[in-house]
Length: 325
Image 1 (cartoon, rainbow, N blue to C red):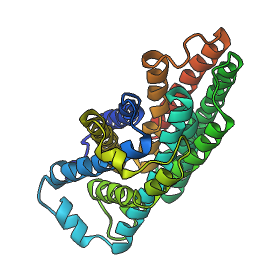
Image 2 (image 1 turned 180 degrees about the horizontal axis):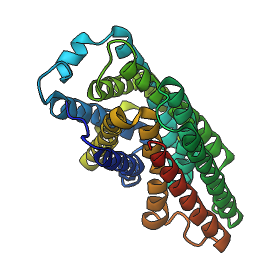
Image 3 (image 1 turned 45 degrees about the horizontal axis):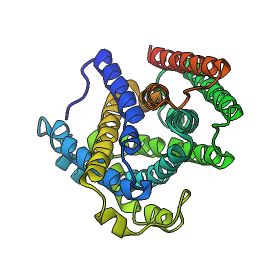
Image 4 (image 1 turned 90 degrees about the vertical axis):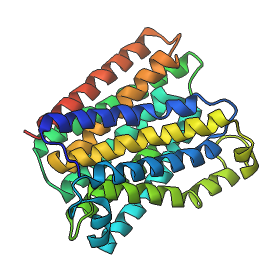
């Protein structure tokens, strides 16, 4: 099993995970006339396939007790169940996040949802694995909260120029963020208690749990969508190949970021790795502002709030990175 040989490599893997987590949603923004409930089937398949590929490559180097197949055979069944449950929770949270992106845009949905997830996830991960400086981690969490508030201020100013989104979309972001902060502690438990799972095994069962739970969560949202009319599987089979391809790519990007984040956490502790990975909203907001022009024509005050949001997210990353000492 490959693990980062130094803190520098681990930090690089965490930064890559943040870029992946903050960029995958662009694949959905890039599809045309393809509902997110249908796109999400491709995405769920993509996250599982990339996790499986990495498990049999990076996760199987050395052919010792930590290699993927050997680790799965020796791990406690309860730890496998924990990761499957974590995957189901993540999947519901992510479905709500994609719906929020559909309603509010990347620049609003990601910072609010993932900012809340950062706070919930870091606190619970630190309780399960108290590694690093709790004081610096707390400072990073506070900075992330301030960044979320500033993004909300920017959204409020956007609404004043007639381009705001509904209160419903913000509620969806909050619920998504709260749930999104809960899946990582399940992974931390499975990788630190009893006969543990390696990051590669944990990621594989996480994404398997997400894929399987689509038959519950996603079918429900197909019948009772948050946006638009109900959709059927007929739309999935008649979708253009580009839509399916972008869904698979989006899943592969997120899955790569997740495996890197969990693997880096073996060295730094999962609370620190998760927190740096959850700087993804800064990446997503940059995509929303620069690539998708979601704040084009907004007033100077909204742009000031956005700039401050980036500053406080950067401070949050810095404090969390320093928490490792």
